[in-house]
Image (cartoon, rainbow, N blue to C red; front, top):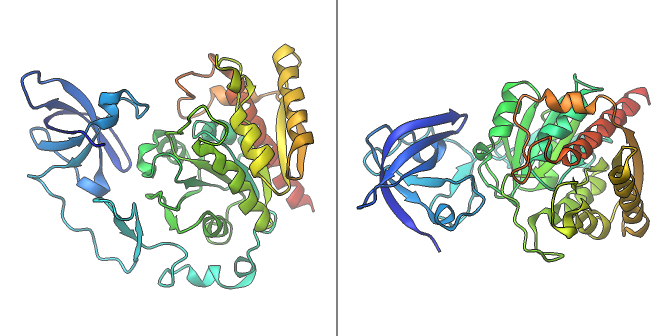
Length: 372
């Protein structure tokens, strides 16, 4: 179901690469003013006073899209056609706003040769450490932990299509890129808007390694995780499949645990059932499971849960105990706001700490590769 609204742009509230947020007054007797987001690659850049058509469905239902409506079109100010491209890979396929891109792995791509010769053709990541996480909010924390030991590492973020499809929705990615914490971005599957597009996660990982020269890759869905309160009905289940892809391609999978000491739902207390399912049952290959070592009651609970996860897992998981000294300071120094499920660092410290521990472990794998 899609609920349409018409309105008039009142002011610009903010902007970041690929997106502009507006205050829009809705047409009608009430004339409510709402926040509305425009993706500039899709609809151009409406101006104050322009009439805009909005998709207000999620806003009206109070869903977790940041309290936003989305600009579908500014019918009186249509954007000019973009420059012609030889790319022919369509994303958001068979929707009214489908777009055509030059994918890094398609035949006309200037990088096609790099992906069809040498190690890439053999499907070999050459031991690339790849951190996989469930929630998009883990990304800055993973990078913070990694940078405590390897601030020089070239990190490529691969956004999968379980959450938001446009990369531009993520202010975190925009801020991390601006700060130099990300070397590049690849959007895979139906997700779009990265520095490079890839048809699959497998080809995206190979591009990260052999085209962008990544030292470390991070694979996480975009903002907007979907869950149903059931064992299998959540988009983060794809984290297990991502680790399978890493294993098939001879990378080093690192499973960042989803942990909370603030979530009141029992299934997410300590290590979330999302991690237990994705890593314990869906992952069929070898992967490391880093746990930040904290000597208190909750820290011991998480370590025990992680031990059970590894012992009972279908795949060949290995528990890695990671010291947490310096991680709190690193998290407080991130260039973007830390927030997960509406909670900040001090409200749910463990959520970010264990993501940072996964980043630190990836840095150590990178150093091992260099030494070996």
